[in-house]
Image (cartoon, rainbow, N blue to C red; front, side):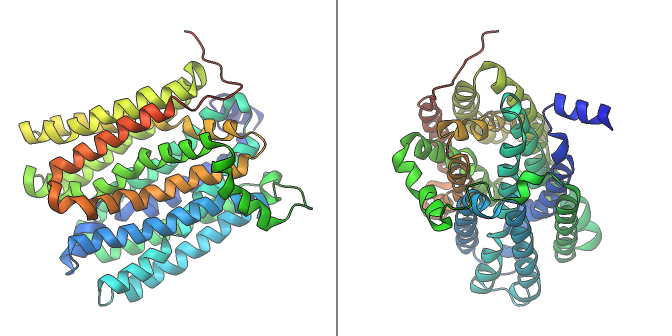
Length: 414
Protein backbone atom coordinates (compact mmCIF):
# COMPACT_ATOMS: atom_id res chain seq x y z
CA UNK A 1 0.00 0.00 0.00
CA UNK A 2 2.76 2.45 0.92
CA UNK A 3 4.62 1.64 -2.30
CA UNK A 4 1.50 2.35 -4.37
CA UNK A 5 0.91 5.63 -2.56
CA UNK A 6 4.50 6.75 -3.15
CA UNK A 7 4.20 5.86 -6.83
CA UNK A 8 0.93 7.80 -7.21
CA UNK A 9 2.32 10.83 -5.40
CA UNK A 10 5.47 10.73 -7.53
CA UNK A 11 3.50 10.86 -10.82
CA UNK A 12 1.32 13.71 -9.58
CA UNK A 13 -1.82 11.91 -8.32
CA UNK A 14 -2.57 12.62 -4.65
CA UNK A 15 -2.96 9.07 -3.36
CA UNK A 16 -5.86 10.08 -1.10
CA UNK A 17 -7.83 11.08 -4.22
CA UNK A 18 -7.02 8.09 -6.43
CA UNK A 19 -10.56 6.72 -6.54
CA UNK A 20 -11.78 10.23 -7.29
CA UNK A 21 -9.84 10.23 -10.55
CA UNK A 22 -11.19 6.77 -11.40
CA UNK A 23 -14.77 7.81 -10.62
CA UNK A 24 -14.39 11.05 -12.57
CA UNK A 25 -13.16 9.16 -15.63
CA UNK A 26 -16.11 6.75 -15.61
CA UNK A 27 -18.64 9.52 -14.92
CA UNK A 28 -17.28 11.59 -17.82
CA UNK A 29 -17.40 8.55 -20.12
CA UNK A 30 -21.12 8.43 -19.39
CA UNK A 31 -21.47 12.17 -19.88
CA UNK A 32 -19.46 12.03 -23.11
CA UNK A 33 -21.19 9.14 -24.89
CA UNK A 34 -23.61 11.53 -26.58
CA UNK A 35 -21.04 14.13 -27.67
CA UNK A 36 -20.35 12.71 -31.12
CA UNK A 37 -23.91 11.82 -32.13
CA UNK A 38 -26.45 13.87 -30.15
CA UNK A 39 -26.62 16.71 -32.70
CA UNK A 40 -27.23 14.48 -35.76
CA UNK A 41 -29.58 12.30 -33.67
CA UNK A 42 -31.76 15.30 -32.80
CA UNK A 43 -31.68 16.51 -36.41
CA UNK A 44 -32.77 13.02 -37.46
CA UNK A 45 -35.69 13.26 -35.00
CA UNK A 46 -36.89 16.44 -36.75
CA UNK A 47 -35.17 19.26 -34.84
CA UNK A 48 -33.51 21.96 -36.98
CA UNK A 49 -29.72 22.37 -36.75
CA UNK A 50 -30.13 25.97 -35.49
CA UNK A 51 -32.45 24.73 -32.75
CA UNK A 52 -29.88 22.09 -31.87
CA UNK A 53 -27.30 24.87 -31.50
CA UNK A 54 -29.74 26.80 -29.31
CA UNK A 55 -30.33 23.70 -27.15
CA UNK A 56 -26.57 23.37 -26.72
CA UNK A 57 -26.37 27.06 -25.82
CA UNK A 58 -29.01 26.63 -23.09
CA UNK A 59 -27.12 23.61 -21.80
CA UNK A 60 -23.97 25.73 -21.83
CA UNK A 61 -25.67 28.52 -19.90
CA UNK A 62 -26.63 26.06 -17.17
CA UNK A 63 -23.12 24.61 -17.19
CA UNK A 64 -21.59 28.09 -16.94
CA UNK A 65 -23.67 28.94 -13.89
CA UNK A 66 -22.93 25.58 -12.28
CA UNK A 67 -19.24 25.97 -13.04
CA UNK A 68 -19.21 29.32 -11.26
CA UNK A 69 -21.13 27.96 -8.27
CA UNK A 70 -18.91 24.89 -7.98
CA UNK A 71 -15.94 26.74 -6.52
CA UNK A 72 -17.93 29.13 -4.35
CA UNK A 73 -20.17 26.35 -3.03
CA UNK A 74 -17.11 24.22 -2.33
CA UNK A 75 -15.88 27.03 -0.12
CA UNK A 76 -19.21 27.05 1.74
CA UNK A 77 -20.25 23.38 1.72
CA UNK A 78 -17.04 21.50 1.04
CA UNK A 79 -16.27 19.82 -2.31
CA UNK A 80 -17.81 16.44 -1.44
CA UNK A 81 -21.29 17.86 -0.94
CA UNK A 82 -21.02 19.81 -4.20
CA UNK A 83 -20.02 16.63 -6.05
CA UNK A 84 -22.97 14.68 -4.60
CA UNK A 85 -25.37 17.48 -5.56
CA UNK A 86 -24.03 17.50 -9.12
CA UNK A 87 -24.50 13.74 -9.46
CA UNK A 88 -28.10 13.94 -8.21
CA UNK A 89 -28.97 16.75 -10.63
CA UNK A 90 -27.36 14.94 -13.57
CA UNK A 91 -29.24 11.71 -12.91
CA UNK A 92 -32.60 13.40 -12.34
CA UNK A 93 -32.61 15.41 -15.55
CA UNK A 94 -30.94 12.70 -17.62
CA UNK A 95 -33.90 10.45 -16.87
CA UNK A 96 -36.30 13.33 -17.60
CA UNK A 97 -34.51 13.96 -20.91
CA UNK A 98 -34.80 10.30 -21.94
CA UNK A 99 -38.35 9.66 -20.71
CA UNK A 100 -39.95 13.04 -21.48
CA UNK A 101 -37.70 15.10 -23.76
CA UNK A 102 -37.15 12.32 -26.29
CA UNK A 103 -40.60 10.73 -26.05
CA UNK A 104 -41.99 13.15 -28.66
CA UNK A 105 -39.00 15.42 -29.20
CA UNK A 106 -39.51 19.11 -29.80
CA UNK A 107 -36.97 21.89 -29.42
CA UNK A 108 -38.78 23.05 -26.26
CA UNK A 109 -39.01 19.65 -24.54
CA UNK A 110 -35.37 18.83 -25.21
CA UNK A 111 -34.23 22.34 -24.30
CA UNK A 112 -35.86 22.15 -20.85
CA UNK A 113 -34.91 18.61 -19.85
CA UNK A 114 -31.47 18.41 -21.45
CA UNK A 115 -30.71 22.05 -20.67
CA UNK A 116 -31.35 21.59 -16.94
CA UNK A 117 -29.07 18.56 -16.93
CA UNK A 118 -26.30 21.05 -17.72
CA UNK A 119 -26.23 22.04 -14.05
CA UNK A 120 -25.06 18.56 -13.07
CA UNK A 121 -21.68 17.72 -14.57
CA UNK A 122 -19.84 20.98 -13.64
CA UNK A 123 -20.81 20.64 -9.98
CA UNK A 124 -19.61 17.04 -10.04
CA UNK A 125 -16.38 17.51 -12.00
CA UNK A 126 -15.30 20.95 -10.87
CA UNK A 127 -16.19 20.24 -7.26
CA UNK A 128 -13.56 17.52 -7.51
CA UNK A 129 -11.20 20.02 -9.16
CA UNK A 130 -11.43 22.20 -6.05
CA UNK A 131 -10.78 19.13 -3.90
CA UNK A 132 -7.55 18.55 -5.83
CA UNK A 133 -6.31 22.08 -5.10
CA UNK A 134 -6.86 21.42 -1.40
CA UNK A 135 -5.17 18.01 -1.30
CA UNK A 136 -2.33 18.30 -3.86
CA UNK A 137 1.07 19.81 -2.90
CA UNK A 138 1.74 23.08 -4.71
CA UNK A 139 4.89 21.86 -6.49
CA UNK A 140 2.83 19.03 -8.04
CA UNK A 141 -0.33 21.05 -8.67
CA UNK A 142 -0.04 21.37 -12.46
CA UNK A 143 0.72 17.65 -12.70
CA UNK A 144 -2.37 16.85 -10.60
CA UNK A 145 -4.39 19.15 -12.85
CA UNK A 146 -3.01 17.25 -15.83
CA UNK A 147 -4.40 14.04 -14.33
CA UNK A 148 -7.74 15.77 -13.73
CA UNK A 149 -8.00 16.76 -17.38
CA UNK A 150 -6.72 13.31 -18.38
CA UNK A 151 -9.73 11.79 -16.59
CA UNK A 152 -12.12 14.54 -17.73
CA UNK A 153 -11.34 14.43 -21.44
CA UNK A 154 -10.58 10.73 -21.28
CA UNK A 155 -14.31 10.40 -20.75
CA UNK A 156 -15.70 13.47 -22.57
CA UNK A 157 -15.49 12.76 -25.44
CA UNK A 158 -12.65 10.24 -25.95
CA UNK A 159 -13.86 6.97 -24.44
CA UNK A 160 -17.45 8.19 -24.47
CA UNK A 161 -17.32 8.43 -28.27
CA UNK A 162 -15.83 4.93 -28.46
CA UNK A 163 -18.69 3.58 -26.35
CA UNK A 164 -21.11 5.18 -28.81
CA UNK A 165 -19.08 3.86 -31.74
CA UNK A 166 -19.60 0.25 -30.66
CA UNK A 167 -22.93 0.54 -28.82
CA UNK A 168 -25.05 2.25 -31.49
CA UNK A 169 -24.75 -0.52 -34.13
CA UNK A 170 -25.60 -3.17 -31.51
CA UNK A 171 -28.19 -1.54 -29.28
CA UNK A 172 -29.36 1.57 -31.14
CA UNK A 173 -28.98 5.26 -30.42
CA UNK A 174 -31.67 5.53 -27.74
CA UNK A 175 -30.48 2.53 -25.72
CA UNK A 176 -26.96 3.96 -25.87
CA UNK A 177 -28.22 6.96 -23.86
CA UNK A 178 -29.25 4.53 -21.10
CA UNK A 179 -25.85 2.86 -21.16
CA UNK A 180 -24.36 6.31 -20.68
CA UNK A 181 -26.66 6.86 -17.70
CA UNK A 182 -25.46 3.67 -16.02
CA UNK A 183 -21.81 4.62 -16.54
CA UNK A 184 -22.30 8.09 -15.05
CA UNK A 185 -23.99 6.62 -11.98
CA UNK A 186 -21.21 4.07 -11.56
CA UNK A 187 -18.54 6.77 -11.71
CA UNK A 188 -20.34 8.91 -9.17
CA UNK A 189 -20.65 6.05 -6.71
CA UNK A 190 -16.96 5.15 -7.07
CA UNK A 191 -15.85 8.72 -6.36
CA UNK A 192 -18.14 9.32 -3.41
CA UNK A 193 -17.58 5.92 -1.83
CA UNK A 194 -13.86 5.67 -2.55
CA UNK A 195 -12.47 9.07 -1.53
CA UNK A 196 -12.06 9.57 2.22
CA UNK A 197 -9.80 12.64 2.26
CA UNK A 198 -11.17 14.74 5.13
CA UNK A 199 -10.56 18.28 3.92
CA UNK A 200 -13.00 17.78 1.06
CA UNK A 201 -15.80 17.03 3.50
CA UNK A 202 -15.45 20.38 5.25
CA UNK A 203 -16.17 23.96 4.21
CA UNK A 204 -13.04 25.70 2.98
CA UNK A 205 -13.73 29.10 4.47
CA UNK A 206 -14.00 30.08 8.12
CA UNK A 207 -17.20 29.16 9.93
CA UNK A 208 -17.89 32.80 10.77
CA UNK A 209 -17.72 33.90 7.12
CA UNK A 210 -21.12 34.57 5.59
CA UNK A 211 -21.76 32.12 2.71
CA UNK A 212 -23.55 34.79 0.68
CA UNK A 213 -20.50 37.01 1.00
CA UNK A 214 -18.36 34.16 -0.32
CA UNK A 215 -20.63 33.77 -3.34
CA UNK A 216 -20.61 37.53 -3.95
CA UNK A 217 -16.81 37.64 -3.73
CA UNK A 218 -16.54 35.04 -6.47
CA UNK A 219 -18.36 37.51 -8.76
CA UNK A 220 -16.43 40.62 -7.72
CA UNK A 221 -13.03 38.92 -7.78
CA UNK A 222 -12.75 39.53 -11.52
CA UNK A 223 -12.99 43.28 -10.85
CA UNK A 224 -10.82 43.26 -7.74
CA UNK A 225 -8.17 41.19 -9.52
CA UNK A 226 -8.50 41.83 -13.29
CA UNK A 227 -6.13 38.99 -14.19
CA UNK A 228 -8.74 36.57 -12.84
CA UNK A 229 -11.20 38.00 -15.38
CA UNK A 230 -8.61 37.59 -18.14
CA UNK A 231 -7.95 34.02 -17.05
CA UNK A 232 -11.69 33.30 -17.17
CA UNK A 233 -11.82 34.63 -20.74
CA UNK A 234 -8.83 32.46 -21.74
CA UNK A 235 -10.63 29.45 -20.25
CA UNK A 236 -13.77 30.22 -22.27
CA UNK A 237 -11.76 30.34 -25.49
CA UNK A 238 -9.95 27.13 -24.53
CA UNK A 239 -12.95 24.87 -25.21
CA UNK A 240 -15.59 27.10 -26.87
CA UNK A 241 -14.45 25.91 -30.34
CA UNK A 242 -14.51 22.31 -29.12
CA UNK A 243 -18.21 22.52 -28.25
CA UNK A 244 -18.86 24.33 -31.51
CA UNK A 245 -17.08 21.50 -33.31
CA UNK A 246 -19.50 18.96 -31.81
CA UNK A 247 -22.24 20.67 -33.83
CA UNK A 248 -20.50 21.44 -37.13
CA UNK A 249 -17.87 18.72 -37.57
CA UNK A 250 -20.24 15.73 -37.92
CA UNK A 251 -21.80 17.31 -41.00
CA UNK A 252 -18.43 18.43 -42.34
CA UNK A 253 -16.74 15.06 -42.09
CA UNK A 254 -19.76 12.87 -42.91
CA UNK A 255 -21.51 14.93 -45.61
CA UNK A 256 -18.72 17.00 -47.19
CA UNK A 257 -15.60 14.87 -46.72
CA UNK A 258 -17.52 11.59 -47.04
CA UNK A 259 -16.58 9.68 -43.88
CA UNK A 260 -19.07 7.30 -42.24
CA UNK A 261 -20.51 7.96 -38.78
CA UNK A 262 -18.28 5.22 -37.38
CA UNK A 263 -15.21 6.82 -38.97
CA UNK A 264 -16.13 10.23 -37.58
CA UNK A 265 -16.67 8.87 -34.05
CA UNK A 266 -13.30 7.11 -34.26
CA UNK A 267 -11.71 10.36 -35.48
CA UNK A 268 -13.26 12.22 -32.54
CA UNK A 269 -11.89 9.63 -30.14
CA UNK A 270 -8.44 9.92 -31.75
CA UNK A 271 -8.46 13.70 -31.31
CA UNK A 272 -9.15 13.43 -27.62
CA UNK A 273 -7.03 10.35 -27.06
CA UNK A 274 -4.15 12.56 -28.16
CA UNK A 275 -5.51 15.29 -25.90
CA UNK A 276 -5.57 13.15 -22.76
CA UNK A 277 -1.99 11.99 -23.29
CA UNK A 278 -0.80 15.55 -23.81
CA UNK A 279 -2.82 16.71 -20.80
CA UNK A 280 -0.38 14.73 -18.68
CA UNK A 281 2.67 15.92 -20.60
CA UNK A 282 1.67 19.57 -20.51
CA UNK A 283 1.10 19.31 -16.76
CA UNK A 284 4.74 18.24 -16.42
CA UNK A 285 5.92 20.74 -19.05
CA UNK A 286 4.05 23.54 -17.32
CA UNK A 287 5.63 22.70 -13.95
CA UNK A 288 9.07 22.83 -15.54
CA UNK A 289 8.97 25.62 -18.10
CA UNK A 290 6.30 27.93 -16.70
CA UNK A 291 2.52 27.75 -16.64
CA UNK A 292 1.86 31.08 -18.37
CA UNK A 293 4.16 30.56 -21.35
CA UNK A 294 2.91 27.00 -21.85
CA UNK A 295 -0.71 28.18 -22.02
CA UNK A 296 0.11 31.03 -24.39
CA UNK A 297 2.42 29.31 -26.86
CA UNK A 298 1.33 25.68 -26.88
CA UNK A 299 -2.33 26.30 -26.08
CA UNK A 300 -3.35 29.58 -27.70
CA UNK A 301 -0.98 29.94 -30.64
CA UNK A 302 -0.72 26.20 -31.25
CA UNK A 303 -4.50 25.66 -31.32
CA UNK A 304 -4.96 28.56 -33.76
CA UNK A 305 -2.73 26.76 -36.26
CA UNK A 306 -4.16 23.27 -35.77
CA UNK A 307 -7.76 24.49 -36.01
CA UNK A 308 -7.08 25.67 -39.55
CA UNK A 309 -5.27 22.44 -40.35
CA UNK A 310 -8.31 20.51 -39.13
CA UNK A 311 -10.33 22.13 -41.91
CA UNK A 312 -7.88 22.58 -44.77
CA UNK A 313 -6.09 19.21 -44.70
CA UNK A 314 -9.26 17.07 -44.92
CA UNK A 315 -10.72 19.47 -47.52
CA UNK A 316 -7.63 19.18 -49.71
CA UNK A 317 -6.92 15.47 -49.33
CA UNK A 318 -10.19 13.72 -48.30
CA UNK A 319 -7.73 11.34 -46.64
CA UNK A 320 -8.77 9.58 -43.45
CA UNK A 321 -5.19 9.02 -42.19
CA UNK A 322 -4.33 12.68 -42.84
CA UNK A 323 -7.49 13.76 -41.03
CA UNK A 324 -6.57 11.57 -38.07
CA UNK A 325 -3.10 13.12 -37.99
CA UNK A 326 -4.25 16.76 -37.96
CA UNK A 327 -7.03 15.87 -35.52
CA UNK A 328 -4.49 14.46 -33.10
CA UNK A 329 -2.35 17.59 -33.53
CA UNK A 330 -5.36 19.69 -32.55
CA UNK A 331 -5.94 17.50 -29.50
CA UNK A 332 -2.30 17.95 -28.48
CA UNK A 333 -2.31 21.75 -28.71
CA UNK A 334 -5.65 21.94 -26.89
CA UNK A 335 -3.90 20.30 -23.94
CA UNK A 336 -1.52 23.26 -23.78
CA UNK A 337 -4.16 25.05 -21.69
CA UNK A 338 -3.87 22.52 -18.83
CA UNK A 339 -1.53 24.67 -16.64
CA UNK A 340 -4.21 27.38 -16.54
CA UNK A 341 -5.94 25.31 -13.83
CA UNK A 342 -2.82 25.61 -11.66
CA UNK A 343 -2.17 29.23 -12.63
CA UNK A 344 -5.58 30.68 -11.74
CA UNK A 345 -5.44 29.96 -7.98
CA UNK A 346 -1.97 31.56 -7.87
CA UNK A 347 -3.41 34.80 -9.28
CA UNK A 348 -5.47 35.06 -6.05
CA UNK A 349 -3.80 32.73 -3.52
CA UNK A 350 -5.97 33.94 -0.63
CA UNK A 351 -9.15 33.22 -2.59
CA UNK A 352 -8.47 29.91 -4.31
CA UNK A 353 -12.05 28.67 -4.28
CA UNK A 354 -13.29 31.95 -5.71
CA UNK A 355 -10.56 31.96 -8.37
CA UNK A 356 -11.49 28.43 -9.37
CA UNK A 357 -15.13 29.51 -9.50
CA UNK A 358 -14.13 31.93 -12.24
CA UNK A 359 -12.07 29.25 -13.97
CA UNK A 360 -15.03 26.89 -13.84
CA UNK A 361 -17.37 29.66 -14.98
CA UNK A 362 -15.17 29.92 -18.05
CA UNK A 363 -15.26 26.17 -18.58
CA UNK A 364 -19.05 26.13 -18.40
CA UNK A 365 -19.45 29.30 -20.46
CA UNK A 366 -17.46 27.66 -23.25
CA UNK A 367 -20.41 25.30 -23.69
CA UNK A 368 -22.58 28.38 -24.25
CA UNK A 369 -20.20 30.45 -26.36
CA UNK A 370 -19.19 27.75 -28.85
CA UNK A 371 -22.74 26.73 -29.87
CA UNK A 372 -23.90 30.38 -29.70
CA UNK A 373 -21.21 31.38 -32.21
CA UNK A 374 -22.36 28.56 -34.49
CA UNK A 375 -25.97 29.68 -34.15
CA UNK A 376 -25.06 33.29 -34.95
CA UNK A 377 -22.53 32.89 -37.75
CA UNK A 378 -22.79 29.45 -39.35
CA UNK A 379 -25.56 30.47 -41.77
CA UNK A 380 -23.47 33.31 -43.20
CA UNK A 381 -19.93 32.05 -42.68
CA UNK A 382 -20.30 28.33 -43.33
CA UNK A 383 -17.82 25.76 -42.09
CA UNK A 384 -14.78 27.60 -43.48
CA UNK A 385 -15.74 30.86 -41.81
CA UNK A 386 -16.44 29.17 -38.47
CA UNK A 387 -13.01 27.55 -38.46
CA UNK A 388 -11.39 30.94 -39.05
CA UNK A 389 -13.47 32.52 -36.28
CA UNK A 390 -12.35 29.83 -33.86
CA UNK A 391 -8.71 30.10 -34.98
CA UNK A 392 -8.69 33.86 -34.37
CA UNK A 393 -10.18 33.32 -30.91
CA UNK A 394 -7.37 30.93 -30.07
CA UNK A 395 -4.82 33.48 -31.27
CA UNK A 396 -6.36 36.15 -29.04
CA UNK A 397 -6.28 33.80 -26.05
CA UNK A 398 -2.53 33.30 -26.55
CA UNK A 399 -1.85 37.00 -26.24
CA UNK A 400 -4.19 37.29 -23.24
CA UNK A 401 -2.43 34.41 -21.48
CA UNK A 402 0.88 36.30 -21.66
CA UNK A 403 -0.65 38.86 -19.28
CA UNK A 404 -1.25 36.32 -16.51
CA UNK A 405 1.89 36.96 -14.46
CA UNK A 406 1.90 36.41 -10.70
CA UNK A 407 4.28 37.21 -7.87
CA UNK A 408 5.67 33.70 -7.43
CA UNK A 409 6.13 32.98 -11.11
CA UNK A 410 9.31 31.09 -11.86
CA UNK A 411 10.19 30.04 -15.36
CA UNK A 412 12.54 27.07 -15.34
CA UNK A 413 15.40 26.97 -17.79
CA UNK A 414 16.16 23.63 -19.35
